[in-house]
Image (cartoon, rainbow, N blue to C red; front, side, top):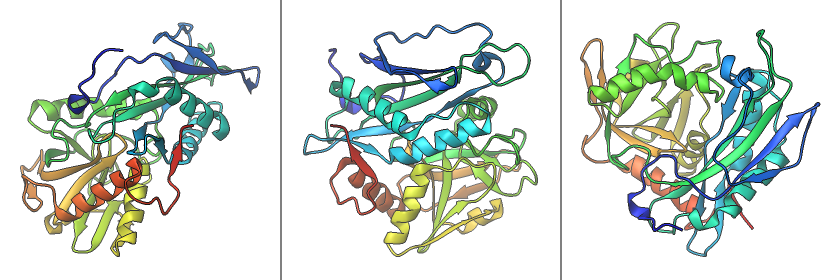
Length: 339
């Protein structure tokens, strides 16, 4: 195996030894297959290529000080993938199959799990695609579920340091009654233009507003948004937001810490009153936001010291990571082990 500088890993694709696959044909899932090839062979008329029948998940495995590999809240990822499949009429992946394949992919590549103490993890990408042939707009009759993994570092190059984000109004990530609430590729394709433009203009990512009124915050690019005011944790509620498992976990931890948790529509104007803000998701865990600039008006919102993560965000981040790595107790049973 090649020498890896675990402390300098980017967040990106990393070739490992094996991936696992399973096909849905004739109304049922087949046998699990192990492959060493990073390529898949699909028909040019597959529905994933033409009609967007594609869903994915993002998860992480962590190596504890005790040498045990932990996977964080896989059941929630399995349930979310089922909701995504239902949303665009794909075959559901049974939870047991999901868990077996995720665990197998991690176990087969366990020497790629970063050592404890480097702030890195093994990223897990479950992927479900329509492989059946359709030229008319119809759901496929055949599907491929696969899982590949690779070691990753921080999602944003800034790591756990505040980033600048940009509010955009000329691009919608998702429609109110569309697919924003499920994890399908089309949502991300729709966000690319605004995200890449923001990066070119000096921002880490964008803040999307809900499409109907353009008054309320929806998502922070590829992550959920949250803000802190005193002892209150506030995160937006909207039918077009993808429910983040990380955000769900942070809300529980905040409540455990004695904070009030509010999940509600969050107006842009409210940003002025917050002491901290952040983006949260599997990839970033928490990325503190130091500054938000409204691209249309130029209005700037600053949270605390824009050069340092706020105290509440820091406490939440450390607590969640400590649970994920096994450094602190797991009171809610979020962690499972790869045997």
